[in-house]
Amino acid sequence: MRKPLIAGNWKLNKGGKDALELSRRIKEGIGDILNVDVLICPPFTALAEVHEVTRDSPVKLGAQDCFYEMNGAYTGEISPLFLLDVGCEYVILGHSERRKYFAETGDIIGMKLRAAIGVGLYTILCVGEKSEERESGGAYDVVKTQLGGSLSDIPDDYIRKITIAYEPVWAIGTGKTCDPDVANEMHQFIREWTGKRFGYKIAEEMRILYGGSIKPENISSLIEKEHIDGGLVGGASLKAESFLEIIRTASEKNKLTTDKHG
Ligand code: PEP
Image (cartoon, rainbow, N blue to C red; front, side, top):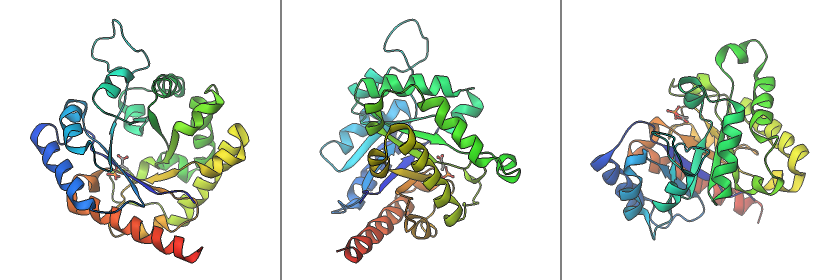
């Protein structure tokens, strides 16, 4: 059974003191929930201080991006090594906002994956189609191209450090959630693709998250689907109460599934 992961992507929000306050409340609020992995991804500038809050707690720390070089003349960039230094275990790569506003291509994302995993980070690779691509029936082709574009040249054993997040672009920050059955079908397709490329055993173990307007009210219907192993949460991760409610629901569902299967 795959342990659910609920990850909060704070984007360009909660720098400084607000980050400390939110991370403290999340840490206190998760109490003894251990059957769900919880990850928060604050902005770069808050990582070191937030690590002081989350260290020695079950809350894991991640960044929202990194560069593919370790050091050098790359003004403004952040090395994967620097993320390790400030206590990160995870990094999100290939988010649709990076693809859209920073022209990230599959190649670039692949280079970032190799660099991040090479130093020991876990990665969350985001894929997902735009609304016109879904409407024209091209969603599967888009996701397949994104997977191939970033994962084709990844060393086989690196897949253990990759979680894939299916995030239909039209559902991100819009309040429109993907129908859970439609999302589950795409997750199954991603698992099948990964199985063909990296082997079916590891694909079966790999977590695939859904992302796109997850809220306390819809997490239950998503996470109960066979291939949905958690969520990448944007807006609803910015308030401790809504993020904690999502985590509690995932924990509750996980218990039910465990009980059902003995
Ligand atoms: C995201 O940024 O990855 C995301 C899914 O955002 P939201 O939950 O706000 O749609």
